[in-house]
Image 1 (cartoon, rainbow, N blue to C red):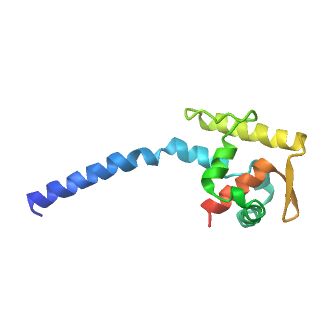
Image 2: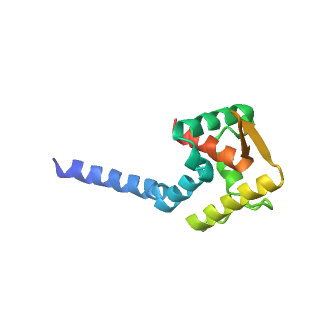
Image 3: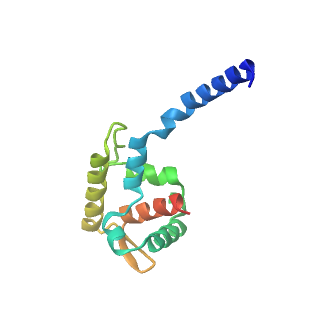
Length: 133
């Protein structure tokens, strides 16, 4: 390989790393895996059932069919404030658990494919379906 080609490829690779590196944040990945895993439901349903629930919910609620919208809704506390970007996985897990509990307390539920789910759980299923097509 010629020195010129080597320098050019190295520069391109370095530039790609600078721009792509922040996007590959393992902490963010862990947070989104919490968002897309409907806690208790995942203990009694297999992935195919969760995916089917998610697809059906997205058909019922077309305004919530995009991943970004679902993530925003899931990462908002009960007062409507978005979760801090510095929140760790445990904080996100606690938030989701509280939201599911509050959904059931307030009868904020939806029936999807015969399952009575908290809205938060249904949104998690929808997000799971998007990420696992």
